[in-house]
Length: 530
Image (cartoon, rainbow, N blue to C red; front, side, top):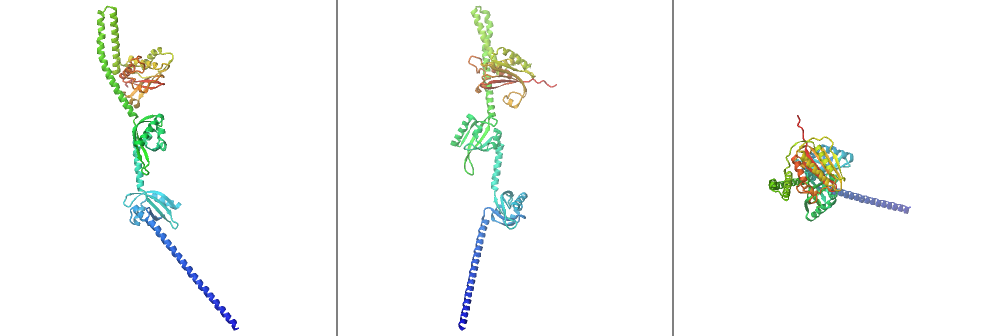
């Protein structure tokens, strides 16, 4: 009984010890667990603190302006130093004042976008700094998860926008010039094309950008000119000269061209700046002026020579009549006759030369050009070979001109004979009469002519044509495109002198192998209004 009681006692003691040990172990486990939780929380707090310090450092040290604001009220709760400097502010109150001056349309756009989509990206705003200076900002914002607040990142793009404005101003200035200004890569691809180039060539900026200059402006054999200029650019970094270019409408123009090598600002890549001036009209006027001076000089020279010859030949012609009564033998009379004929022929030649220089005064009366031309054609038609067909276009009413009938007949006869001779293999001789009002374009080529109505007589053939280099010389005295000995070369020069004395002018258009057209412009006789 006693033994059983002892065993029970030991069992109770042992159980209590075990329970105590378990309790102590549980307490130890709880303490360690709590310590670990505390350590974890401490580490988490440290991590949060470190993260907060890290992001605060980024917030404060960011080169971009950062601020937190209310989407609804635009109240600013936090801002970094960068946005303060950007706006020229020293406190949140100053910054709040600056932001309140943003354009109303900008504030509304930011509010609507952030509210609807939760963000707005790279929105450009033009405003002012605290000191009144211009400020362009690139505004991006994202709504925060908790509450109506948003965080904005603001970048100062004032210099970029001012640079863009400067470029726009420079482009506007470049577009004001009448010169064609373009920029091409070293492979000839167009990267810039100003308004002057659009007007000069007919291609728009959009049509030319990205196109190869050589393919559009330099047709056929002209490509060699482009390649030679490119060679000089590669060697000497510049080129100046004259080029023939083809417009969009196919018309060829002469340009004075200046090429320079320039480097792109951001990558140093070389490009070619080209400035072209249309000198087609300038060259034409220069050529016209030189030709007029030349013709005037020739007229003065031949006129002076003609007067001297007239002074030499006139006494000879007058002496023949005095010598004839004193010469009785047939051989002597034959010699005198030959001398007289030669002297008279020389005087006629002198008369023609003087006609070229100053025209012939003659009698001036109202002349119906259709009647004059009709009489000339009736005469010409008898001498035309069967291979030449004559077309008359003389119908209609034309006003009269003030002139000399015989002199005008000489002009039209000369032109018709020349047209006939230009068609040895046959062809069509077309003579037409029309009425026109001389415009500025026509008078530019004939500066001595007056504005007003003209009667125009055109004589066209389908013959051999005149070479381009000879067209400017055909009115010179003694110049002829015929074989030597086939004429004096005075026909056209005399015709021009007569027409000039009638206050008119003659034009010529010719294509080798296709034919020639002469046009005689005579001022129409306008009846005075009573």
